[in-house]
Image (cartoon, rainbow, N blue to C red; front, top):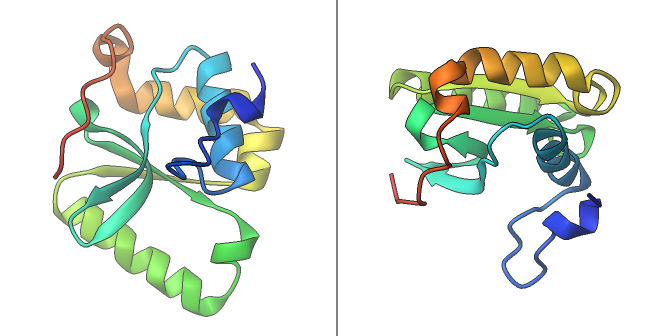
Length: 125
């Protein structure tokens, strides 16, 4: 598969190369496709598997590379955990240089039951 297959310019469902690479990683590793850029409470998350209450945040340098962004990311993660989600954070290097590790972490969090279930329909939280 090619990255451009995941990009929808009319909806903006993937907003960065990192998000596209992450969706490609999921497809190549046999991980069910997450919803992307999904609203959860007062935030929008990069990727979510609703049925598993699992969120992945992707930390590229462009948007997450300074102290202000780090503080905001920390607050977002705390909030998401407080409302019952598990949150994993991955960097560009994780996704590009360690895709098997990223996939293993996601599989471990999704669990064997969810890995066999088709992705749930998008609903508002």
